[in-house]
Image 1 (cartoon, rainbow, N blue to C red):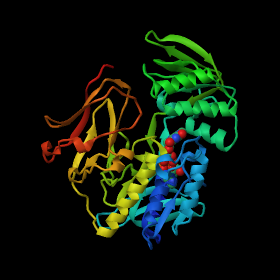
Image 2: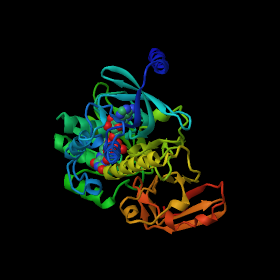
Image 3: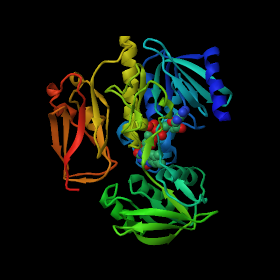
Image 4: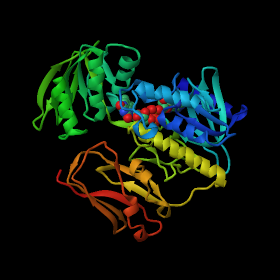
Length: 443
Ligand SMILES: Cc1cc2nc3c(=O)[nH]c(=O)nc-3n(C[C@H](O)[C@H](O)[C@H](O)COP(=O)(O)OP(=O)(O)OC[C@H]3O[C@@H](n4cnc5c(N)ncnc54)[C@H](O)[C@@H]3O)c2cc1C
């Protein structure tokens, strides 16, 4: 309560203090934010600031493993080397870089006006006023409490992000024997991180019948590292008071009980956009992603406020996030050049479960172009919330089906490109939205 009163006081004082004027503010110094800055540096004379809450730039890759940079930098780096390269490149630009500076709130202005925001820097609060704003704040994993797992709150429970930070950046051994909850790609990355720390792995546990990653890769990891994988299995309780002592599982259809001894639990996946800055603002949030809804230029529903990277939908590959940052930077430069201040009306595009989301959520059919880049960078994309075998998808507008496509398999939590250039947009009535749904599937 006291904290929220203090925050309100600081926010009110924004109106009285002289704001730092900017052309573009980029919030978040990960691959998306830095790539946007690099693109913006093609236009001389812009007043651009990059604001990063951590003390160092680079975002999530700073604590990740290998295979970074392929599609955006055309080279393969380790995560830390990739982050250092981005840091070096952005520091060569003339832009103001604020690290250790967390943006606390944003106040979108009316069309034609600037946008305001308040950041907490090591020197204290700083108010800013900017013509353009880019949200590149990334995503986070659901913690144990968000997964509604009962039990006490012993030490030894981590998300993958915290685990990577402890092991890869601080050289800390998290425990002796760990259980991994979830089977998205990042669960396999947790196996590597735990092995690097010298922690043995008791098992990987997945609630769903199907694994949420490539089955062949999961099978190889399981065989190479001798890690059993339990599907259709949930965590009933985490045991232990001071420190995790074990986990009680409910196995299969009959919910058979199994107790596993371990001193560490790693909660992986179930990523959500770090989009709290748009809560309570006029920026439209898409309930299916929990991130800002954007158009094909990655502009949100508020003119001149853009979003790129994992803030749009949860975790995706770093190089796609970087390319999105580049696209957002390019879109901002285009608007600066044209002087456009409004929002171009388009066709709203939404997902119906079990399609988890489509991004972007606003399509301008006249601007859909087939281009080589779109093959490399499938930014019109969707995800499904569970793995589907032989699904047929359809895009509908009212009673019209404007596209259908059959797939042999869609793996949950993978981003799939959507061929919007093949949609029959002429059959969409003005004012109608288009919905992507699953017409049929074997499972
Ligand atoms: C645990 C985990 C493991 C991953 N492993 C891989 C992997 O192995 N390979 C891969 O390709 N991808 C991986 N990813 C996905 C990864 O997030 C992307 O690769 C990439 O880092 C996304 O770039 P981004 O710029 O959108 O977000 P991020 O890299 O997350 O950067 C966002 C930045 O914004 C900052 N920020 C957030 N809020 C504020 C605020 N209010 N004010 C100021 N700064 C703020 C954060 O501190 C952060 O530095 C992983 C993601 C997670 C969470």
